[in-house]
Image 1 (cartoon, protein in one colour):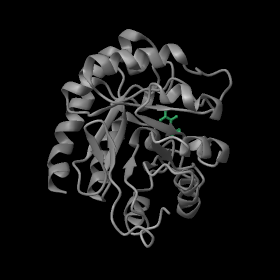
Image 2 (tube, rainbow, N blue to C red):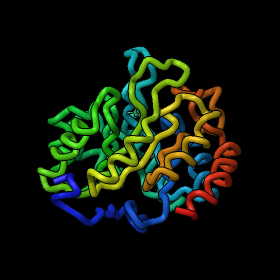
Image 3 (tube, protein in one colour):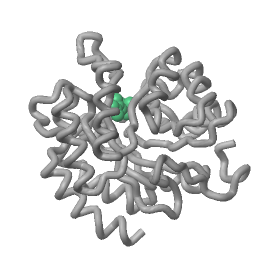
Image 4 (spheres, rainbow, N blue to C red):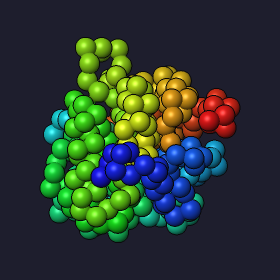
Length: 264
Ligand code: PEP
């Protein structure tokens, strides 16, 4: 179902007034890694909206490698995201980790994010497949393209056609970056699948200083959108501070991205 052979025309996923896919303007989804407070989220939402983002990201349920790490504010965070959406009009992308919470998260999310650690959580994939809410399926950090497309197949098979793939970096021997952002995957997917492909250079590099360059690279190789972490004070972030850009950094990034985005 995911293959271009089966479905030769590109899929465009519609989220409110935003269209994601081949032939549509590059979609910028931006916001904090985690919803930490009302103020932090609203400040970020206003800033990214003013600078041209069209979807707000924010984690309510956080997949933390360490059980001692910040786990997210849960429902409180979902309520904050709802307030940010009501104020800015930005649709929301947020992660769902547990099949038992899909219905709850669907009540708030315009795009359900499946994180790298859950790309092969087949019960979760089937559950989001039973909804019609858009799903952003992140690449498993050790997944091949074939495995990733098989995971997308689980969602499509349940009847949800609104699947977006997100390259977020894979594990390699390199340690300078948190992950190795595989931009070749983006170009390759364009010849394998009709599904929209977006790129997350924040998780992909773990370094805010590299995010702008990788956004430009991603769009140049054909990405349909970007998922970018923005925090008003990254040094105070409860999670993943080093990869989050400030609103000022995001402004520069958007200026640097504009010529590439308008050329593709
Ligand atoms: C995230 O985007 O909040 C996240 C945890 O990403 P990933 O699943 O790619 O690590």
